[in-house]
Image 1 (cartoon, rainbow over the protein chains, first blue to last red):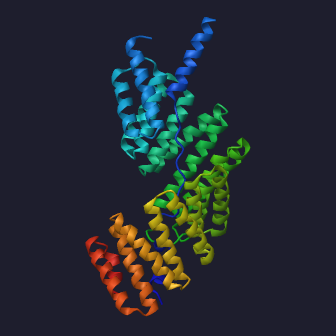
Image 2 (cartoon, helix red, strand yellow):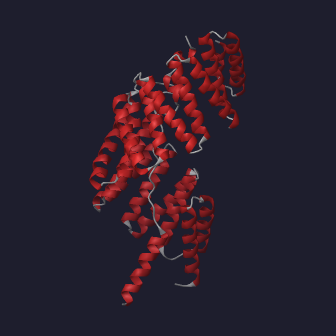
Image 3 (tube, rainbow over the protein chains, first blue to last red):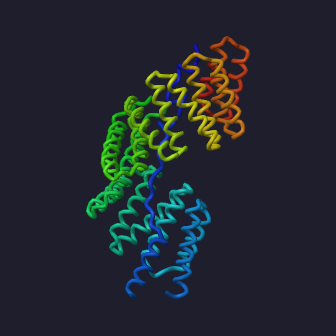
Length: 46
Length: 349
């Protein structure tokens, strides 16, 4: 019988318990803030 | 706005553009120049700190990411920007998790959740719940014994993993209500991995199948590949080796499509092991040889050692003792080189 049957299944297939999905980082956008700021000043002039 | 202000803003906008294209190194340098110039607009400064933290996060420099997300948190608290504080707490929590500082990360997740609940921000709440699940998942995994089988972990790990599944379930309720299919897919993926570690392979398969559906819906090949690989692993533990082989084959096709050689090697290795379990040693040898070639190309000595060891086993099973001895010797040579004591002992067996 092959030796591989004697070792842990977790070691022969992967070592980290599955592939995780990416983290979701929060975004603070300078361009969006600038657009809002710019639009605000245009609106206040009208 | 004076000249200095315009210059800081210009640099920040350029840094943002560079990060969006994936050039985080240039983005970091540009954002750091923007800080050097300085700005009196504290919202812009908060955005720069936050994006610098995220850029360092993507570059896997977690200590620098921590530094900037901390600056952002302090700033948002000082100016009383609650939404900004929630976002900074979320980013800080993700960073602390990757640094293995789980208890501090959980405090950040709680702050993220508390603020988003207080301001009735459901999207933010869902993200906080997802982050919470991820921290508990990582905490649980960190408490697992090395080499232990899924489902056979210490109680401390199981408690953390059960907490993770509860937060993921709570997140699922919200993202379903919000109709956020992309978030739904991500959560099913991580929930599947949590069930897997808890030894609940049927539910793991169910969650990964749902993740696979969403990945296909978005044409997200990387997510599709991850789902197939995770499905393969879960089916192995269910003893459904043929089904597992099908998923690993799809993983291999997608890895080739995505030109990801390391993942291609991993898929070949998994296929080799699966065919060993199916006692189809010729096919096992074919995949282990494919794995060996890639491991050599990538200069992955540990992978190469594993390939030799597996090839030795398969040839032993076929009664090819001469070839088995050749591969066992190659494995021993690498085990010595990589100071893999357990591997060396196995090789001498």
